[in-house]
Length: 207
Image (cartoon, rainbow, N blue to C red):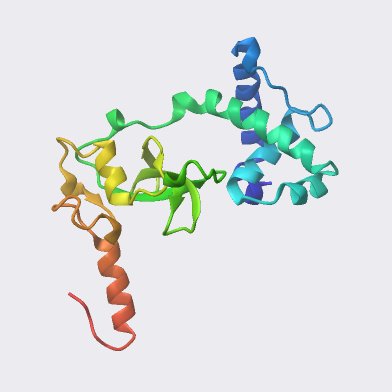
């Protein structure tokens, strides 16, 4: 279960309790229930599997012995409730420490492709979605997540739009070459490391 959902069974059970609580306090129009044939626990597992691995819904349905439409209903219901249940746990810019070193990078959250919304298309990823910026400590602890921005936007623009570095010592922030020219004092050790590893195969070191 851990390798498909990213959580242990006990953690999934705890998450189910939070989802149930979010469902109970939701307004009536928002109370979209999960398929009874799956139940809450399996519906949460199905949703986490889908979100983590982006597996085909029909494939997940085959694993759980249900139809693709059942899997789709479970994902639609649980995803909304997960957002409500976990909203308070999402790290914000206010929690960042000026003295801590952070590694920042962008990721694309895939979404449906609408002809009327070409701004969602990412040329880099060759698909549609929303760009989200994520910062973590050097030990890998998630420290901040930005609001989503149209997928066509470059990481450099999205970080500037988030204004998370305003009034902050960005010398403690590290990012790849996607942020070159955005913040002059931002370190880019990832780029240097890649260059060094590539050149070192030929016995030449890049300073």
